[in-house]
Structures are given as structure tokens and as C-alpha cells.
Image 1 (cartoon, rainbow, N blue to C red):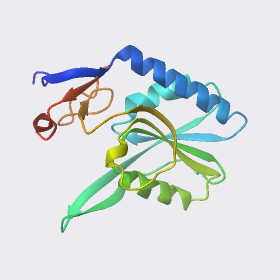
Image 2: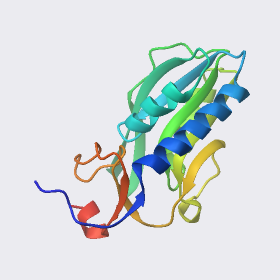
Image 3: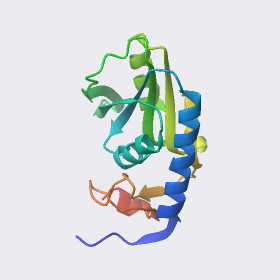
Length: 178
């Protein structure tokens, strides 16, 4: 399979590296002296999560979760397909997310994690699309604001491929759904 054609590069490798480094420095300052668990939402946040955790200069714990959304009678049913291995009770939890669109799935996840009695639950999202957000989620850190474009690269895929691109491109909607 050849790489899908794209409209343009939206975020270069260098721009991503710089912003992730800035986020890591701020998280380092904000969580100094606190017990922090950073949770990756698989699979999209994998590259962001890896780079972000290396940019943080305090001791942290890491874990991963995976969420599945299943259609049933035209309404999405969200369920956890891979849960945490770490007990987050009384720990600060920071969810690393690649992109926040509606916020519905992330809202479900935050609510689920808050029920486990952590010290706090916040979100660090590399990309946020405010025009699509239906609910507020606790976005403590954001990398970039995007519009209703379809993105590929740096963890975001087309048909489970091209996550490994070191930059982010805008693609046509019909390619995103293929």
C-alpha cells in the first residue's frame, strides 16, 4: 500500500518535538514532588506518550489503556478493552491523548478513573478540536488546536496504517474512511 496522498503537512517533526518538550517541562514543574501516573490511550497516543514521558524530568509511573466503541442501535457503547495494571488510588493521573474531538469517550474514561479514588485526573492532549467538543473534559495541557480536518501520522492512522509517520498531515475525508 502506498502512502495516501495528503493535502499538506500540518505539523512538522520539529514542531511536534518542540511542543512536546514544552509540555514535558510544564508537567515537570506542575507535578514536582507528586506521585504521577501517565496513562496512554492506545493506539493513537503511543508516539506522543513515548515522547512526552521522555520529556518529563521527574519520576513517573506509566500504564496503558485501550477503549473500544461499539455501535448498537445507532448509539455508541464504550468499553475498556485493556485496563490499567497500576493501582491509581491517591496518585495523580494524567491521561495522554492524541486528539480530543467530541470528548465523549474521554469523558467516560475520566469518570471511570475518578471512581478509583486518585488524587486527581487530568488530560494532556496533543490536538484539540474545540468546534467538535460536546462535553468539557479536564484538559490541563494541550499541544495544538485543529479544525475539522482528517489527520494522519504521529500515532493517527488510516486503516491502522501510517501511525509511524514522524509528522502530521491533513488527508481527504474519503481516505480517512477507507
